[in-house]
Image 1 (tube, rainbow, N blue to C red):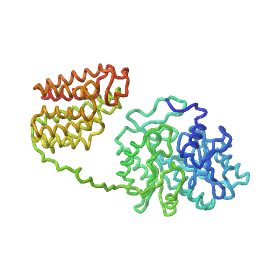
Image 2: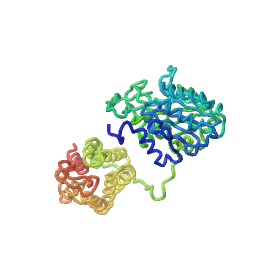
Image 3: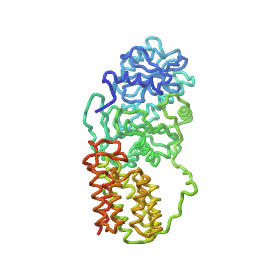
Image 4: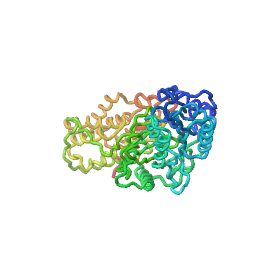
Length: 548
C-alpha cells in the first residue's frame, strides 16, 4: 500500500517532528533521547499540579500526542505502530513531568500497555514519586469479556481527568475521577474495511459487501461479520448495542463522541452524524464531541461511538476549556435545525400541472435514460474526468422523474422554466448548470416562437455562450450542436439522433479538449475515448427517437 512514509523505522519520529513543526504542536516539545525515547510533553509545564501521562502504540493519531496540552495530558509516550512503548520511555516521561503533586497514568486495557506502564509506575514509586494508574476498558463489543479493550472512550478520561488536574485537585481525587469516568464510558466501533499495518500489503479480510462490528483499533477482527446495510441501519445497530450496554434511565444524560476510525472523512462522517441525530441515542445525548478523527486505526474505514454518562461534576469537567486543537469542544446535541427562509424573489410561483402525453413520454424516456446510464457514464468519466458525470446526469433524471405529475406539460414555455428551476435546485456539477441553462433559454424562445426545434437550438446556443465551449472542443456540445442543426433543418428525431451519435463518436478521435475537466489531460489520456457528455446526449436522443 502506498503511503507518505520514508521508512518503517523512522515513521514515529518523523511524525512527532512533523507534529511539533505544525500548528497543532504549538506549546509542545519532546524529551531528548530520540529515537529510543519518544515522549511529547508540554513546553510550559511547571510541575505544580498533578501530571497526566498516557500513550501507546502509534497509528491512532491524533492520539496520543495530539492531546498534550493544558486541560488534558501533560505528556504522551509514542510506541512503534500498534506496539506498547518501552518501560524506559514511560519512566522517562513520568520522571520528566512529575512534581510534588504526583502523576496519573491513563492506560488502555491491553496487556503490553498494562505491563509496561505498570512496571514504570513501580519503578517511579521506588524512586519516591507519587504515581497512580487508571486502566480504561470501554469497548462493549463482547459484553461478557472480563478484560474489555480500551478504545476511543479513553479520550473522555483524558479530558475530564485533565480538567480536574488543571483545577488543582489532588492526585487521589483526580485518579478517582478518572476511574469513575472510565467506568461510566461505553464504546463500540464498526468498519467497512480493516486497517493495513505499516510495511505490510495484506488483503482486506472484510469482503466488499461485508462489515465488521466491534473490531479493535489495532485491526483485530470484529465480534461479528455482517452484511453491508445502509448507513441509517448501521448506526441504529451500533446505537442499540450501546443503549443495551448502558441501560439509560429516563433522567440520564450522556455525552456522545462520534469518531472517524481513519479514512471515512468529513463527508461520510457528516452522513453518519445525520443518522446518529435520528437514532435512538439522540434523545439521551446532551453533549456531542465530533464527528472527527479522534482515535484512529491507520486507514480503517469506519466509525466508533462512545457514550459517557454525565453528572454535574462530569458535565463541568467536560465543558472546561482544553488547549489541544485535536480535541473538539463539546457542543449541545442538535436534533432540530430551523432553516432560514429563502430571500424574496427566489421563490417562484409554479405553473399549474397540466397534461401532454407526448411530452410526458419524451421526458420520462430522457429521465430513465439518464438514470440507467449512471454507472457506465461514471466509468467513462473516470477515464477522462472526475468520475461523476453519470451521477450528475442521473440526479437530474431522478429529479425530473419525481416531479412529472406536477409539471405544466401542456405549456411548453412554463414547462422549460419549471425544468430549469428544478435543475438549478437539484442537479449538481457543471453538467447540471448547463442543462438548466439550456432549459431556461429554451423557455424564452418557445414563449416567442412556439417551435420546439428553435427552442432547442436557442438552448444549445446559450449553453455554448455561457459554457465557453465550441464544437470540436470535446464536450457535450459536439453532440448537441449537430442534433440542433438537424432539427432546425426539418429533420426528424431519428435524424437528430444519428447526428448526435456521429458527433459523440467523433470526440473519441479528438486528442485535445478545449473545455471541461478533460482540458487538463494530454492526448494519451483522451484518444480513443468519447467525451462522456457527448456520449450521454447521443444515448438520450437514441432513446427518445426509439421510444415505443
